[in-house]
Every structure is written in structure tokens, then in C-alpha cells.
Length: 219
Image (cartoon, rainbow, N blue to C red; front, side, top):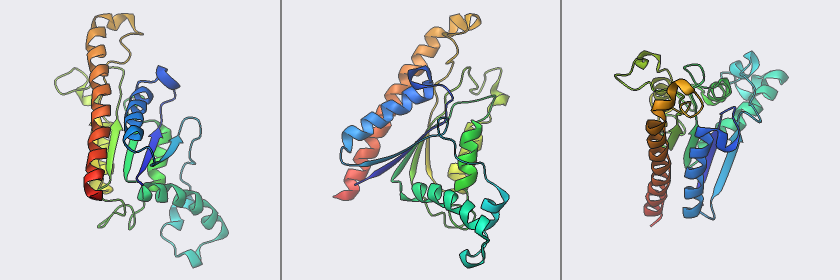
């Protein structure tokens, strides 16, 4: 059986959230292809992981037998998150842009799973795992747009997921999600709708493509 690690981080609930709406399409398509599979789900807005502490950080570089009780307790929570990443056959992450960057809850998760010498370094423990990131944003930060220089989500996550953790990274980028709510962006609503529809199609297509990839490996 295959395992999907699904992480949402938007502060907005349900269909109000663009990233959640699109990760939900991906997950449903995935589950249709893998009805007997396992989904590990983390809603970082509803149930945030702890921000990394000095004890949790230092424990990662200390032999288990030499850790203090505080280090051991702090690392136990961190290791659970690491093991979820290592056990996943595929990873799905909703990463909306919050104030030009990722949500702090997602950054906390990354700080916990990023462990040099294990998940990061010369031989990352989850290397090659496919990860699909739904990077929604209220405006557009694409090349050639006025706010191109404010794009700090895609480049950061590419450096972490692909460069450091060695994951096989794909992005789905629904843009202009504030257009229906902001009168000043009303003329951009058609572009928003097209971007949203494209994102839904990409999510379903990527989930099916991954399913076919795993099926081919199983033969």
C-alpha cells in the first residue's frame, strides 16, 4: 500500500481557502487510484506543530544515550514528523502565500523535519520522494509582473525541498485569489477563474500521473 503525506497550512477553512480546495482535489483523485492506501493528514492551522526549540535542535546532533531528558522529550515530537516524511511515498502540501512568504506554521514543520545528516545532507533519507506544493497567492508574482521581486515562496521551497531534502518537486500555482473579494481587482476575475480551473486540472492530473507511476513500479 502507498502512503500520502498531506499537509495543509492555510488559516482559512474549507472551500474558502484556495490551497485547501486544490489539495482536496488532488487527494480525492489520489484516493480514487489508491482506495486501500494510507493518508497521513496534518492541518497545521488547526493543530500546529511546536516551533523548534534549543532542546529539539541540539538533540538532533546528540547521541540518544547522551541526551538530557528535555532533549529526549523535545526530539520525540520532532522525530515523529521526520518519520512521517520518510515513510511517505508522496507528499502533498498546501502553501499559500502569507505576507510574501509561507505560513509560519509550515515553516515550523520544515524546521522540525530538516535534520542535517538525516533528511538533509549528502544522502537525504526521503530523497526522490515526489512532493506537490499548491502555492496559492492573492495576486500575481510571475516573471514580468510588477511584483515579481516579491516572490519568496517558490524559490525558498525549491531550495529546501529540492536542493536540501532532495525531493522530486512540482508546483501548482493558483494566482489572483483575492480578485473576487477585492473590488480593485474586479477586472482580473476572469484571469483568476482561469488560473483556478487550471490548478484543479493540474491537481487531478498530477495525482493520476503519480498513481500510474507507482502502479508501474509494482509490476
